[in-house]
Image (cartoon, rainbow, N blue to C red; front, side):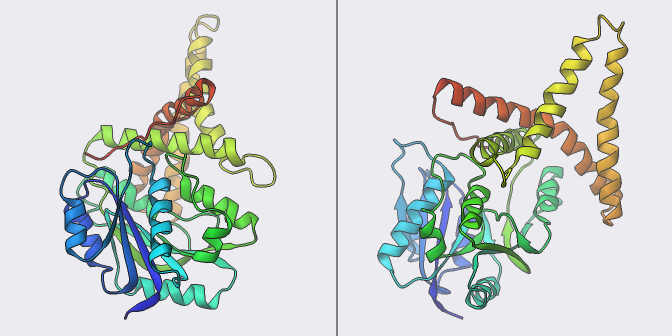
Amino acid sequence: MYLQRVGLVAIGRNEGQRLHQCLLSVVGKVAHVVYVDSGSTDGSVEMARSLGVDVVELDLSIPFTAARARNAGFTHLLQANPQIEFVQFVDGDCEVVGGWLERAQQELDTQAKVAVVCGRRRERFPNQSIYNRLCDMEWDTPVGEAKACGGDSMMRVEAFQQVDGFNPTLIAGEEPELCVRLRQQGWKIMRLDAEMTLHDAQMTRFSQWWKRSVRAGHAYTEGAWLHGHEPERHWVKESRSIWFWGLGIPVLAIGLAWPTYGLSLLLLGVYPLLASRIFLNLRRQNISTQDAALYALSCVVGKFAQLGGAIRFLQSWLLGTKRVLVEYKN
């Protein structure tokens, strides 16, 4: 089915075959497709143009962010086709599942106060590595009205314009931050019980997972800094958890070791307890024993990586320096 009121913006850098699959899944199905490239050297720009896709090449003298890329794609899309009412955003490492675009448009057509709809993103190769598997579990979120969406989602043009799009300075967490501003204007975010995209994380090394967790810590901290006030309290709980588990407990345990004759080191025993609590909660949700254990371990170890991201944000804020993108892919 051809959707004449829907446009699509894909973003990427050196995604190669993943981008090819992404664009093939949408070309000819929507009114206009724009690909925003950020300095690819693998022929992505030429390949996209060969498929008849409109290409925007970002000026790399300005620091790159996914938010900036999506805004540039949106602006170009509306200039090329001002009649478009809905825009599907998709990352270049994702393939749009058949039937999703129609389902998303139908939801926006029938729900006048809904600004954003998203569905189920899945990993293409969840068993390729434990890190891909962790991503697939992360994507499995509750359906219904939500507070935020991810990078793949269909948005109402009117709502997107009302809040001036994404915050281009954010290096991560730009979608939830946009959703905060949308909800403040009375719009709703809906997550549908429908397959949306196939994602290829291509994470095969611990270092990649660690960098991704660092990026998450940066996003949580900056999000709380921007919208941590009442009544939103955006990511305040998550940020406090990072500082408590990543820094507070270790400092207390080690700092008091001498005066307590080492007894304070027993505080480190709270980490296995935290992992056990997460594990048991997941098992109650019928998550397999192996997956529950893997996810619980990642949550605990990830606190220390996230602390690194939180510290990065504070350093850049205190020194007045620009945030530097944290990339985990090859």
